[in-house]
Image (cartoon, rainbow, N blue to C red; front, side):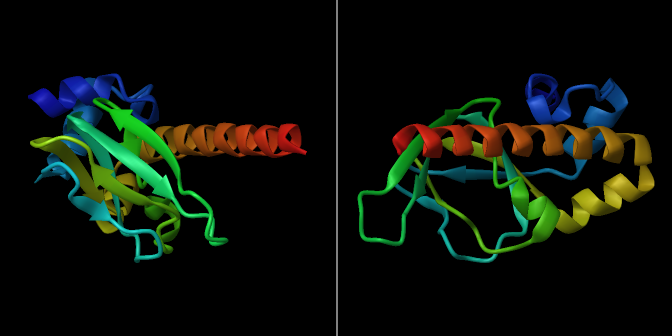
Length: 149
């Protein structure tokens, strides 16, 4: 399956075995978007994480001060929206498809938490990887803020 092969290269899934990757793929739902089509908007309720399997997306963050939005581009094998799996809070950014036929697989927070409960080893690995990723992002954000001063 295409998704399992891509999940093997996703940092969040590092350390999962083939059976665990298959279980994660089984709770994933295929979604397709065209260029300039929003996947979700900043400030809306978050309840899914996404894995990009084809195309590219733009992550756009408004600063709330009327300045130019900050953009970041992600492609195949990258994830976004993972914080929703932890806290189901409002989205911190908007995500827009950059190309026609952009394919992402979504995983709902409910399905993810049920999977983590039924397979605690999978849950531990993914939560550890998520914590490491968020820690890395937070450290980089702090470094960027300190260098701008």
